Amino acid sequence: MYTHEFDEPLKYNDKEYKELTFDFGKLKGKDNIAVKAELRALGKPPVLLDVTDDEYLMRIAVRACTEPIGADIFDEMSILDSRAIVSKVRGFLNRSGSAT
Image 1 (tube, rainbow, N blue to C red):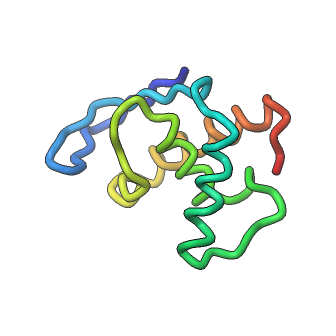
Image 2 (cartoon, rainbow, N blue to C red):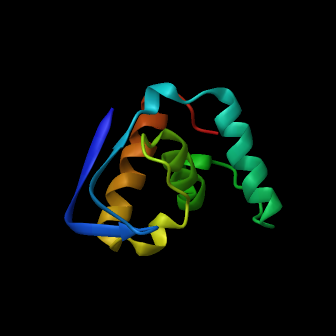
């Protein structure tokens, strides 16, 4: 479980967030497959290592988030907040041995 605290509240879908919590333990294999399907549907080319693809990692973060958010929330975040969350997802996947 990881809670990211924003330096300044983040406004998204008429709601203000001071923090977001991500429960990586709730992720399943179907989440991996669904995110890859989302990216294919968007015309994104597959990558060799998912942990190097920020868009893949952002979409995994969305699925791990305990709040109902969409991938577009990353468009509203500062780059520092976005990078911090992506880094936590990458670290989780690397620790679990999931490199693809």
